[in-house]
Image (cartoon, rainbow, N blue to C red):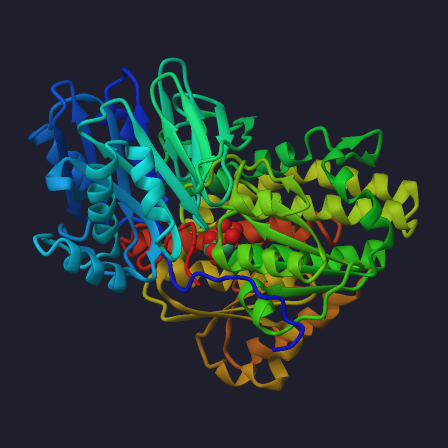
Length: 631
Ligand code: F6R
């Protein structure tokens, strides 16, 4: 494929949560607390390893949710110690069994190792191991166990865990974060990363490692981001980061702005319920400090100053819900900044040989900042000469670090697997970008920009009034809990809202759901309408200038005439919709681009409540993980 930049792409990848600790707190409590916050990354098995004060290594691991491990440790505790590692797994390689759960052992049970990623050449490595050490016994089907034995044998030779890790990582192909402890070296945890996340938490007389800052935010707000192909050794008083060659490398300290309590469920029935109600704050916090005197203030874009003046095209990338934020952004940026915008799914973008140059700005959107498809798309864009900007919610995340600039959304930690508050924060951030571009390009007057920003600043209060309809939506959801199929229609910015409503229902309630651009109805989907078919319709304001309202009202009439049950999300008091809708969820009057921020919310609540009515786990839907680090 001539002209296509080559970016190494790990084929497949475990999505797991990793935590490491050295210090004088109860290590088990620190590890389990960290795993609880990371469980969204994977939740089909979990395990810990701790070195006690006598220098013995104990491990415990179980298939099933973290709670299985927590209960077992409560019934039969393992000895306390000052050094430990913990893991929560989302299996793609070797089923979710006790045996395949991490940690895995090496050096006759003196070394424990956990892993996020996949070691692509593990079969060859295993063959070499068995040739050189035929006595090696394998107890699992995992690639991780091969690495554990390799580091174990390397330790025997070097008597130094860091050196052993360094020797082994150079032989591994694929993507990995590895953490290891050895009972001969209490007070030391060694980590290594390639294409898989790892951050360091800096404490006083204690230090932490985690897949992301949620792992340790309860204990410290000081964090260090580490780069690809680096090894870190932590002791209670020291953190040393080197490259795979052993050379010391500079690190970047940052302060975690997330509040530890923000990652707690509090009194809520689920993280998702909590996060849905946090959406007004997610918008307000994303705007905080970024609107000054009626103008957009985004100093984080300084690195792109030159680029923004000359770009002639934007490509927005994301997956799932993040891609819908991008779709909403496309409508706004094209309208405001008069610049062509394409929106692509990260995984489609990378393989379609996109045409890119230095006049293209590639904007990636990712809550986690770790989604492998998006990360590799960003790398691809950079290799092809485009400038990259990311919109991320997780500080120090890999996508943020790989981009030329980052606008952080300040939604706070999103724990529920299904994205809610991150989405409204992403839309807010992309609006800020659109208005900033409009200002640079002179496509909107200062007054128009001020008005749009004022609208945005009013959005949190409007959203609060939408949240007040929770009980009503719950009632509908309970009533519809046997429904087998739901359709969603929208036009313009209501189209991505329809897509998002369908995605939420699929992933949470396991119900067939589809979103359509309402204009497409007559081109096929209307054949699906039969008596009783529930259809959510996202209705724009009748006062809008886009003349979309009459068109959607005709769409409602068309489906209603064929027996559809119409569930409308419409502006309060919209008299044209009332006669044709079986139920209306009202959103306050607002301008075109504020509407999606409000209209997402009833659909989120509906999907969550319908899943709850079916007795499903809304925070951890089946087969999913929050950080999708799989191709
Ligand atoms: C759906 C959902 C996913 C994510 C997608 C991207 O509720 O959460 O569709 O939006 O996996 O994840 P991030 O934003 O972390 O890149």
